[in-house]
Amino acid sequence: MITPNLATRPFLNTRPVWLVAAAAGVLALILIGFNLRLYLVANQHLDDETTTQDGLELRYSALATEVKANVDVLERVPWKSLKGRVDATNLILREHSFSWIEMLDDIERVMPYDLRLTRITPSVGSDEVTLSLVAIARNRDVMLEFLDNLIADSRFEDPTPSSEKTPEETELATYLLTMRVTYHPSEETP
Image 1 (cartoon, rainbow, N blue to C red):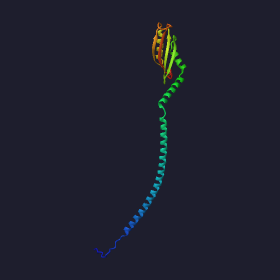
Image 2: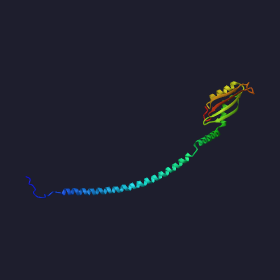
Image 3: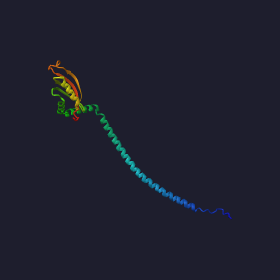
């Protein structure tokens, strides 16, 4: 049977509550200490990162100013006229590197015995040369043989006669042929 406690203030066992509260307080103080330490360490690292970021921003603004100055200088360059001058210089260099001896050897190889060239005018391009030729022959078959030889040779392309005069039209009583042909000096002969 339960006997009722008749005391006006009954005794309560509050020791476990105080122990738990004290342990929670000590644990809270320990966690506050860790939090404070982490905060200080993180702020020191954050200060280092902020200093690095400020240095990088200064460097970026200096580089951006330098790049803008370089872009302004490049915008003042006359690119169109410069390209024209470079192309003209390259053409002069190609003309100076053009081998007349090699070209004359190639023409001699395809030229028949009875044909005589009176004029050769080269016009140097990027990878080919356009030749204007004036040829004299005693008969028409020799000129046709010359055209056939030009067509058959890999260094010559598209021989196009521009005019032909018969012996009745010339002062020397010979056939006169004016023509254009494309010459490829860089191609290997078979």
